[in-house]
Image 1 (cartoon, one colour):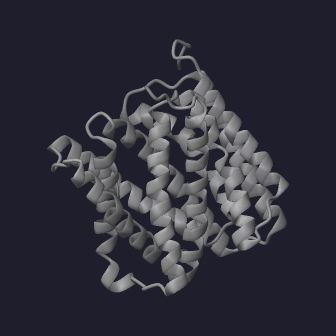
Image 2 (cartoon, helix red, strand yellow):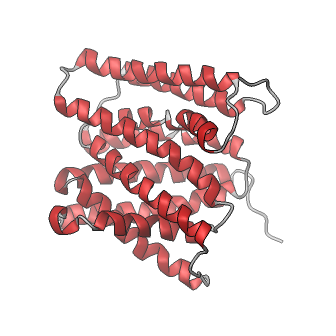
Image 3 (cartoon, one colour):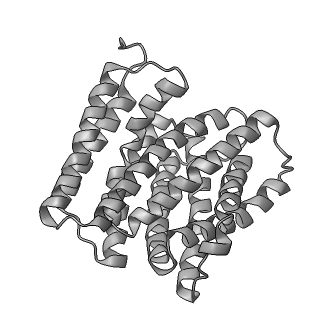
Length: 293
């Protein structure tokens, strides 16, 4: 019987995170060319075209009402999460955007308390303080070296809004996983986003030229491939072992930001990222039997 190499889940997680960071770089270029809305909608539509045949080929059937409700809710949340994040990428360097988005797991701790009734540990509160401090370091460093502009403030606001929705997305994924398989989740994730964003297409859609169209197509393919790689990896290794690799996204983002847009990574961005990652690490390592507040 063939057995997978024990390091394969780690390599695939690293590759999956890298593919998502490369997708962000392609989407930044596409968003600058045709706008965040057009880039986001076309990516969702192409993603649906790629994954729906797979789901149907696996015998996919229309979901029952509880699962459908979650599909609709997560698709809506994800649509605006992606739209606001891609808009933020047009205003901020990729590495800074990725670094600040790392606060989403910490926000998710509090949303889990509100939406799922989970109790917040003392460690989680300390982790949240570190994450918030890291965010302030990154933003403060940016304000210290650049003149604050309305465009920058809009980018930061969109990024924080996206992080909030990303945190809610964590909760919805946890609920979805109990009711539907990965192929169904991926199909409705792209499908609901495509339909919802498509409502504004008659007024807002800008058709891309060849280069931007190739970037959007590559983004859709990278999104599907990354989802498959991460799903395979997380099915074969413990989440606590793989989650730290997710933070390699900052390194990938710094690399692709420099290669595509010549974006420099600053010391405050690195320092703030370290604080946020430490906070996420503390929250993830907190024992379940620890006293709570």
